Amino acid sequence: RAKEVGRNTYEFYKEDMQAISDEYLKMERALFLAMENEDFELYYQPQNDASGRLIGAEALIRWNEPTQGFISPAKFIPIAEEIGLIVELGEWVLHQALRDVSQWRAEGIWDDSLQVSVNVSPMQFQHAGFMQMLKSAIETFNVPPHCLDLEITENMLLSDSESSLDLMYQVRSLGVSLSIDDFGTGYSSLKYLKSLPISRLKIDQSFVRDLLSDHSDEVIVLTIIAMAKALNIDVLAEGVETQAHQNRLTDMNCTLYQGYYFGKPSPAHLFSKAWLSVVNV
Ligand code: C2E
Ligand code: MG
Ligand code: MG
Ligand code: MG
Image (cartoon, rainbow, N blue to C red; front, top):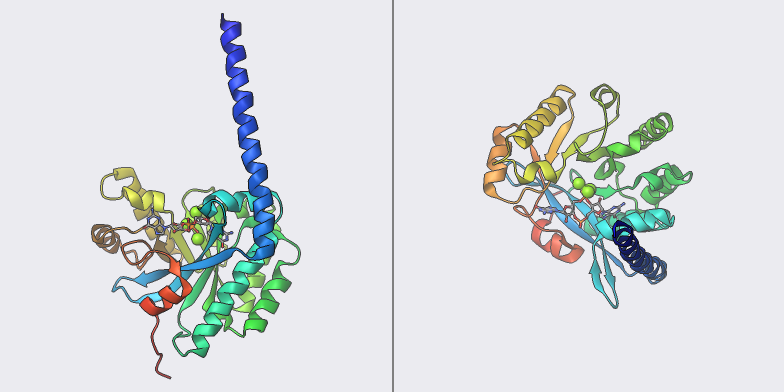
């Protein structure tokens, strides 16, 4: 009997795995096709200070797949990483973000104190051509490097930390800033954090979500803010959805915010209409 159950479980498992790998293969092919057709779009989400003033925007990729509709980047970015497409895709993202900023500068609606934040996956960052790609992208689109911020994750620092650190210093020497995304979910040690050329920690939204009801989340957020302050690093809370969240975070000395309460990610033209206006020069 036990054997039978075991066997059935295995059969189900096999079917499940088959279905998963079919879906996976389909997605792989669709991704390569999408890259050829440039079926991607960048959305922008505002980043704000405590008074609600805009300080920058995070560029977030969207994939409108012709047959399936929008597919979440949380789903396809890991696959793009696995099949090595992330290098090309990441380059497309950086170029598009810089193209949008250079367009807004040309229209006179981009203040150069603003920053655009671009997510960079570990594999893309550590790819041999990354620094050259970054340099020439900045030159091509003629955007001041301090207008660009790259979001990397803590876990990138685990693998071959020596060369990651070196890369981070090279990025900083261009004038581009670095943020650590999803902070608190990875494994970086405090001692290590001290030595990183980082401008900003982004507190992961999983800690912000239940901030008002979960005491341990509250302690974690307080600790991250205190630590960032001590290290002279800016701290931004992700996933701020309500006024109550912002109030609590402000009480905790958090200075920067991003989340639905301030604005959802939206296409470039809608973002600029809502948030950018003629800059006095
Ligand atoms: P992330 O970099 O941590 O981006 C923040 C995510 O939280 C975004 O999801 C954003 O839409 C969502 N978000 C923002 N405010 C709120 C809020 O108040 N409540 C809730 N529940 N969610 C909020 P999105 O756009 O689906 O992206 C998911 C992840 O995919 C990103 O997390 C990032 O890791 C990755 N990703 C997105 N675009 C890119 C890209 O161009 N390159 C790379 N390498 N990764 C990307
Ligand atoms: Mg991010
Ligand atoms: Mg994040
Ligand atoms: Mg994330």
